[in-house]
Image 1 (cartoon, helix red, strand yellow):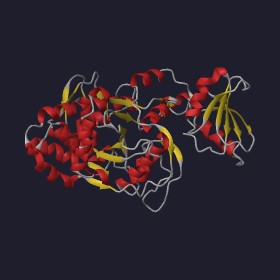
Image 2 (cartoon, helix red, strand yellow):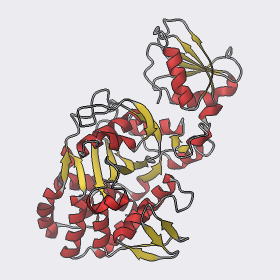
Image 3 (cartoon, rainbow, N blue to C red):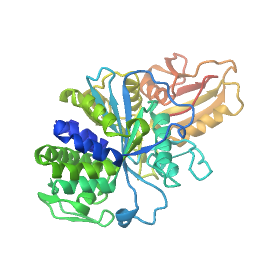
Image 4 (spheres, one colour):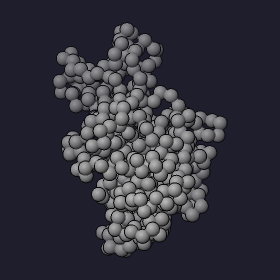
Length: 441
């Protein structure tokens, strides 16, 4: 129940309707609230080169907690000139509707941001930055559709997963849902004083609502290690408590209406999901999934500082575990969370992988460009040279003692093949760039 509840809250009011057991008596609510939900036409803005859908029937839904700074939210940073995203998750629902996985993508994930339409007649240049910037770039003109399109394009490029739907929930809707429940109890172990989140809380259990509730899920630097990963955990716990209280408290039409009115007014989806009926249909599918087959996890990652000592603010996704996670979802294969987390306990940092790059693509300068891209990702480049120009397949060759590092590199190169090479130089992984080379993930 509680895990389903987390999906309900972040996916909007219609999911909450189903999950708290509202039946025919609330039919009037459906009709009245249907018009609250905003739709965003993203299909024509995402662009080409999207991943192929490898598992027809399954669904990948991108869920964004929107950090809008307009209206009552201005106190959290009204100087910002673009839209912001505060929470980013991918919900994968299997084709047989027997399992689902929710993957949190830390907002400080250092990734490739592709070129996006900024909505003002210009396009951004492709570059590397933290993943939440995509929402701001696409939302330069203030339209959620553009922000969503750039975010979808960025997530797809970095995960290889085709997104089928999109949902965004903003600050004000969150506060309204909490207030409709007369607040949520939280139990911080230490006092929290965070000027950025406008939050002052004593240690111990207490009920928060309005700005305090919003500040609690937004606070970061004043709690624990100050990381976005810690905030993700607090947000998930808060949503679990909110969903549980919704089931307990929303028994009267007035209380239910206040909760759903706030939820639906803050909700923006792609056109196919923009309505109580399609959202309720999705909720019904999620509701039927057994609790023990509904998995919540965060993409394996580590502090980028391990590879780039000057960067103390961001995280990078951990390979090959991240690639294996996304490949499983792309093929609609259930993820073994325990195995994934166990495998991620001993990361192979990019800077420990020594790489020789050989250019066999037939394109002059390709090897040097690939080497520079890998270097910027933290890999240690020991040399750049040439291979036969008729090399068709991109390969990663390695001596026997470099199987782990080779796997890390190969997992960053979609379509590449890792092969043991008895003649390879000791301690070095050799990347031969072939004609099929696409990109470094």
